[in-house]
Length: 241
Image (cartoon, rainbow, N blue to C red; front, top):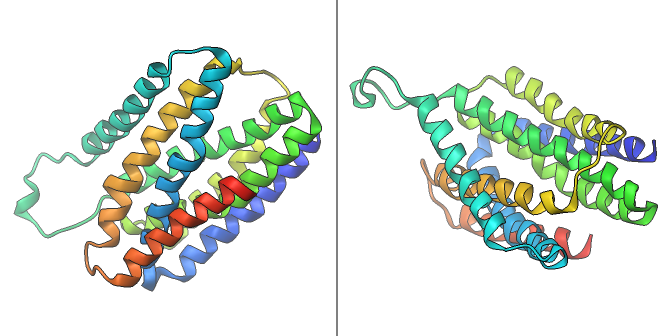
């Protein structure tokens, strides 16, 4: 029950991040630059170290989660490209974005937020101290999750109202994830596979989707600087929070 109560704070954190993105639509390229840095930083400073820690403790072959990473990257790449394929040639009409890609991205991030909540719940299954530490880390970076969700929706030409709806989906997902751990447990050996798959997804949307979009219309020194700040932010959150 404590895990569920703490997960409610992630709802607030995610919502605040999304509202920040909604209010700053005219500076979306700056938000995207920061977001790309955060996503790549989370892979480097959080997911990969945790993968190596668990594989070492469980005496697993580290190639297995790396295969999952490649699968995560390629699955989202293939899903995105199949989503935007048209029968007509792209060059036959004006440059445009694809709202369904934003929806797909937002749903994928909501899935991760659900698993964040699962992480909180499983932490409390170990002991209260572990659960609290996991909850604090999730609450800290869920601000960026909300920002990411709204940014991906808006940059793919979804209306603000729809972006807000998917923000609410992302915000409630950790609460549902924490509640779900009352019903099941995840074996430790399965954790590196999940983390590897999700790391591949983050690398794809961070480096192949969000970062190029941040520089599509105007590439500025401030955008580049915010990408560096985003990576530094991820480092601070994962190391000291």
